[in-house]
Length: 299
Ligand code: NAD
Image (cartoon, rainbow, N blue to C red; front, side):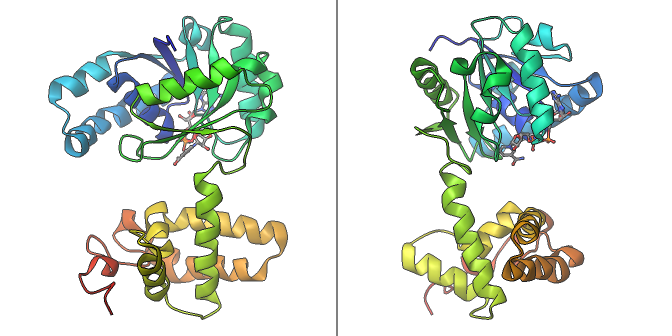
């Protein structure tokens, strides 16, 4: 892997984090977004990340400033991709937007450039043809708060070149990630293939009246040694996200139990401003949730 210049396309929540983390680890980073207003917001977001790197990682002022100095910002796609070894795409999760983006990028990027998608729910094979270079395309999926939650799931589609796969795995390690290769396409990658069924099962136990959130979490925590149960995890994910996923599932399949889950999240939590850790209360109250009390796991 001899990547030096990385372009991050889409500078929202995840794109800003991917760009800053990559610069923090010494790469030259160009941030691309649709206009200067979006890039201005990204600059603010990235300036705020500096404090998180200092608090969470013990980075020095000089280090966080040097990382920012390795970044440049451009709203012209051809210019932003002109010397890119790798373009990481983190634009909206909307198929026509991504298809259009890859079609344009494929036309303006140099032949050497590798493309990687951070999409959470769409598969690389959906866009492989649009890129014009399917062998040089794959998924590279990060988690929110990338500097702490440092998973990188690297997923091939059937046409991805083996060296490209290996190089992107090496790149993920070079920017401080734990690299998790997926040899085949899998919706939800590894993490969400495990996590979503767990969260669903917890919520179904609750709406069926089997047990309360604390008992369900306690069972999982004592039984497996996990640091959080499904409701503790839902508070971290945010109940609005959980609601949107549950509602979409209920509407797509007519699943009445999932509809009950969505209704419960809405009326008992979201409508009362209890959105999870972010608002200080969800299934638990923060910063000292009941499941952290010394006797929670003992009785
Ligand atoms: P976001 O809405 O915060 O940011 C999207 C950015 O893309 C915005 O800055 C927007 O201006 C820009 N954009 C829109 N159209 C564009 C285009 N044609 N070209 C370039 N930029 C364009 O979204 P996000 O939450 O950062 O998600 C981006 C991608 O990352 C999605 O594919 C999502 O599935 C994935 N992802 C998100 C998370 C998360 O927790 N938010 C985690 C992992 C992966």
